[in-house]
Amino acid sequence: MSIEKSGLPISPGFSVGNALLINQAKTIVKKKKIKNSEIVREVNLFQAAVEESKNEINKMKLNDDNQYKIEHIEILDFNILILEDEILAGEVIDMITKKQINAEWALNKVLVNKSKEFSLVKDLYMQERLADFYYIAERITKNLRGLNQDLFEIKNNTILVAHDLSPIDALKYCKDGKVKGILTDLGGATSHTAIIARSLGIPTIMSLINISTSIEPGQRIYVDGYKGKVKWKVNKNEKNELTDLKNKYSSLQRNLFEFSKLTGETKDKRIISIKANIEISSEVKMAQKYGAEGIGMYRTEFLFTNKEYFPSLEEQYLDYVCLFNQDFFDEVTIRTLDIGGDKIQDYTHLENNPALGLRGIRYSLANSDVFKTQLNAIFKVISNKKKKIRILLPMISNLDELEESISIIDETKNKYLIDPKLVSLGVVIEPPSAALLIKEICNKVDFISIGTNDLIQYTIAADRTNETLGDIISHYQPSVLRMLKLISNEIPDNTYVSICGEMANDVNCLPIFIAMGVKELSMNYYSIPKIKGVIHDLSFKDCNEIFNECLKYTCPKEVKKELVGLIKNKMPSYSSIINYEI
Ligand code: PEP
Ligand code: MG
Image (tube, rainbow, N blue to C red; front, side, top):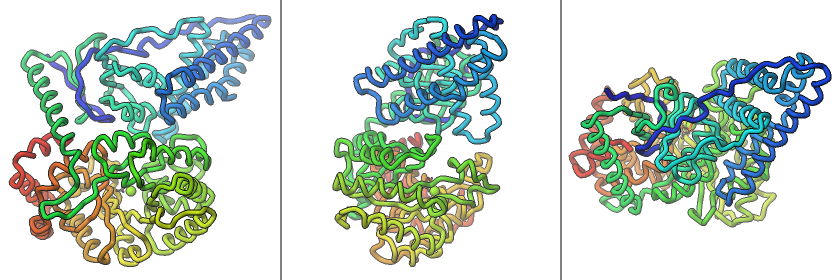
């Protein structure tokens, strides 16, 4: 009988391949008492193994035909940092000396203690860093034993299965294109490994509890990275069904790629610019491939949350310069740091209710040095590259915050020789208070972008990270539609309006945005072809009628039915797009 498991869809795509179980046998470590006279030798052996591990990682950085991208190099650097870290090496040496035990055992003990410490930390990002420590410890242990690193060969069509996969393993095993899927027991969307999988375009599912102990080596596995589902031990019928599904995904993908070349023009010739949201700068390449006409929002917090310290001006500058690599886009939108909420917090300032606390622009204004460093990096790119950058401010909830931000931005900008045409300023409309102040906000900025994720969370008072809330937090809720209507009624004429929340990915919601007269939709890059495929069959008149109709409903199911009905009736040929929800 076939077995199916569901986990977190991390990187989209459908693939079939054979399981390669890695990092399975946790190194068995023996405890040995050593004599007083052997302590120095044991410490030296340990230090030599640390040095060797460091050299190996450095070699990976240098010898790899430049296949590693900036964020990959950062991960390698982070591992070197751990190796240089007094905390790991110092604690191990202390234990060898005080307890008179062998280096392997001491290292293992320190790691067990570290994992206990990390499991107490509530922050997901910090918990995910434990994988880096394990990886380093494994490498040192192998070097202590003088073992060769390459334990297995990666064949074509490999699906990597692991309890947890370190970012370095992901880089090492996946870079030559033979790995077609990654499945792990643990891991979350913000882990380094998840980011690497996405940037390499490998279908990946994480949080598949016990997958690494459920699958046999060599097992044929079907990975549906779109839906986060994995299947194996399938019978003949299921195999045919899955092959069918794979073919449907492929042909859909091919058709969708055709759509990626279209412009976002409605039937009655209204132009909507279709752009991409990105989380790491290297995603610009994929965004361009999927038909993005620009970057509508670069969520810069990853660059911040990825580190133990705030990135320097130079580090941020180098990262922002990558947004213009290969001249994919002439203009990009950089959203300033949106720290707080469900994203990483300042550890020195834990809050009872972070979603309502020092989040987004509030954090930047309270830490103006952090804000100014980021702005300096942005202006340095504009002045050196002569490219257009739109600056987007997150979580503005009152006009004082906006005015204070504008004065800091102007003061920083004045230090650079910049053509004013290259900079524009926008606000993400998220808290309902910003929606209520929309007229005044629009009069002070060049554009607005409606952040429906937070707008919905705060309008409904429903936590966007709570998966048990179901329909309560649906974007089909009548209150959400009425909030959007309120905003569009109040927006002054000629304001450039974008939508940057997840709602922009949903084809069914296109009529709402067309009726609102938005000029831009910014979304996950893999949703772009689907949206482009539908947009040109819709007219403002039809969309306006349907939006007005939807505003009369009082329950989300009725709203959804009406919207789905329009898309299906108008465009039967696209129903497959809607069914698969790529
Ligand atoms: C939003 O709130 O809709 C948005 C785009 O910002 P984020 O999802 O990063 O909070
Ligand atoms: Mg938001």
